Length: 121
Image (cartoon, rainbow, N blue to C red; front, side, top):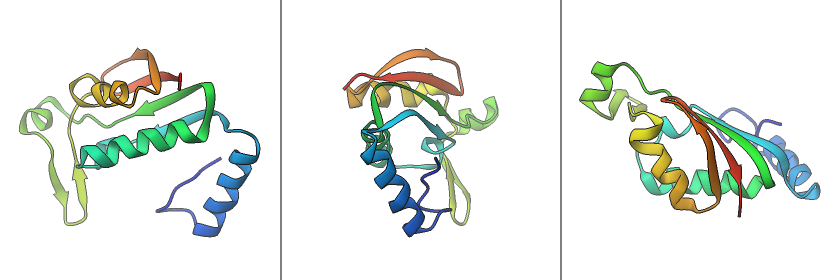
């Protein structure tokens, strides 16, 4: 069930979230190429906490990020177009620490570009 404030109407998002809450959370969750386009750490943490709020305790979630090429990672995060940001970081270089910081997920497995996590709180 897709919840997306940028590509789904507010009404549809509200309906989908109500369904999730009526069922005490979703069985799984996915953040696909979301964290890598957000510059601010506090916003990334808020999104991870929101993911935890939407899934049941014990649910498995998949988090993917775009890490870019080695040359891009060496240059670091930056504005890529007028309205776009890319962190150009691997899961281990940036996002795993933030996942742990929420204290709501256990990391089951990770690679450069994805993590499989389980909601624990």
